Amino acid sequence: MASFFNTSVGRKLVMSLSGLFLVIFVGLHLSINITMLFSAEAYNRAAHFMATNPIIKIMEPILALGFIFHIIYAFILEIRNISSRGGLSRYSMTKRSHSSTWSSRNMIWLGLFVLAFLVVHIINFFWKIKFGNVEMITYGNETMHNTYNLVTSLFKTSVVYDTIYVIGAIALGFHLHHAFWSAFQTLGWSNQIWRKRLTVLGDIYAVIIAVGFAIIPLYFLIS
Image (cartoon, rainbow, N blue to C red):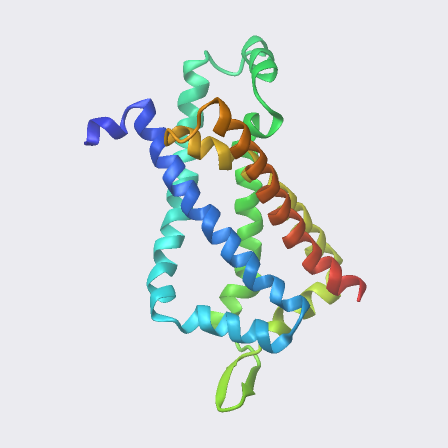
């Protein structure tokens, strides 16, 4: 088994499975964040559910390890790919540009930007909620963090953070543009017919994610 994961196919399979896991998480995260546009209570309750649900609390460290594993493994694969192509020669880069899309050629850099955006996001929101002094609010008999006020206050007052957030959303969209169909192809679920369908689905999903995340800070900035 260990020898299989040391092969090119094994490494790609690991990246595909971990990537699909993160694709699902991103979609779930957007579905929660989008409730900010409709109701403070809805978003606070959703955030409170995610923070207190036993299953989610178990999944949280698994998700964190999944992100770290996916990123480290991506670096390993990229370094090995560069070595197998004979380094970053002009010829190899030119050859790749004619046989691949821009997003596929820059997956590692898009991933790094998404990682940097994630770190900023954790510092401003997740860390403050877990270890800071966030205002509490009560709905009925239930008291919870006023996550809505924490998030929207930053969106309303920081153009710099809004810009970072929007660029991060666009980078995530480009990253998913290639990752979506590529993961299914690695898993063997892509022939000539399904490759086209998965490419379209990947494009739609990437646009939804990028636009969905990007409109949230812009909405509060201009409202």
